[in-house]
Image (cartoon, rainbow, N blue to C red):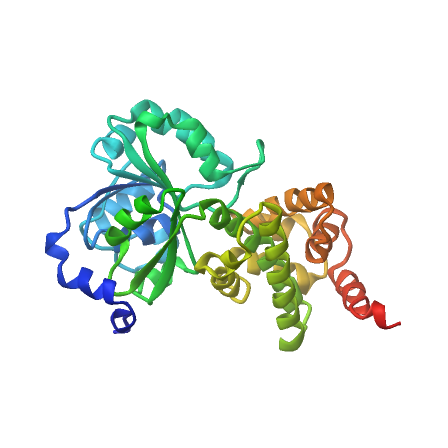
Length: 355
């Protein structure tokens, strides 16, 4: 069994003294793949209940200790509770983890969670994306929707992780970010296991931004591979992607070194190089077909990257930032430029200053 014990003294101390930790009550909103996978490692040291709207899915978790829809026959830990009753889910919650698509984020907070809260709790965002109607980051939506007397602190958990690999206890590194670093520091220990490593940051806006940016860039890396470009060219695009991450981070006047957090380079490496990633997979299919069509898009349930392309493109245009990769993506996905033509033009222009 692989573990991280030798690399993290704090983690060692935690593992040796688990019995001294007060168990936290975690409520996970959303019974999808990632929410379920997080529940499965959180329940090692805490009480965890999953809330979902799909009765079949919830019964599967509660009775069969599986989430067959996402994980087939893989068994979940027996201690995970699950319910379709939001009041029951929130009754004892010390922390509420939001593992739901960004387009329903505010509605769920406003109409489901807020009216049924019985006590103040921490709010931890697991989702990646914008509020696309208001063009706001999800931590902002939490802060604006939940009154201060009910919100003990807003946090973001992010990092390179495939849900199925979490279930298989693959060593994984996350960043837990909050405006108040002490809040992240205090909660960190409840997330750590002998295969989960947590670092903390006070750059919650930066982590939210990185979570949004990496999705469309992963689509582009999928397109490039789908078109048949080899490792040199794919590494070229990956390097350019990091440069564009820095430009966007600088626009928000944040420390550009945050791209080296797990939510930056790490997450882009993971989701930009594997068909396990929805964003990479949709890009790969677009590249293989050399066009965008509804059949490809409809074959994927939640593709946050596609929603983000237009917003980031318009943001860059408004602020005079040259983001060549996002220009490429916009032309391919919104103007129906063929991917092969767009990439040919991009690579032809790389040394224009030498002509």
